[in-house]
Image (cartoon, rainbow, N blue to C red; front, side, top):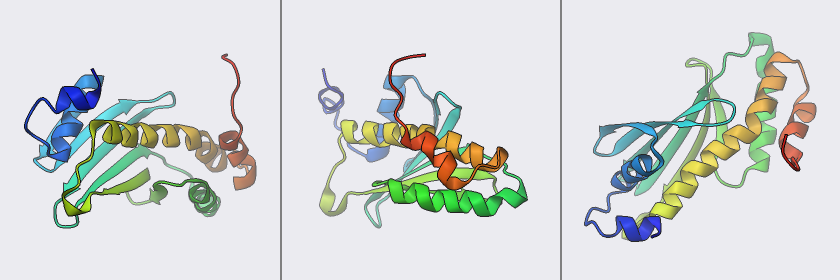
Length: 167
């Protein structure tokens, strides 16, 4: 049974209800912060990502924020910001930003559901999965710029290169 078939057997179609159902399905640790917001932890290869999804009825948007801690040295920030610019040029959906005050790298995306549109469980699952995969893809590049002193171009070669086979 697909995620949609399983979920549509119930009558609730609030986007955050769907996210909660997905978190239970994947056995992710989560906290339903409010009726319109949920926070969860999703394990990746490099680290555990904090993901928050919030529904804004006013602008009919499901917002996703995927964060991970990053404490680069102050002198690495210009290169990190340049890396973020180049990274965002490579991303079609969503964008990275660095919240210096909180020392968090952030992947953000907004799914607009205007006119009473509904997001399917598959769409939301893909949204969350894409946030984690994109964070996993670029995490090593951010680390190489911040801690190994590599240029953005050198570091991004790690994210551009495709791995073949298994280690």
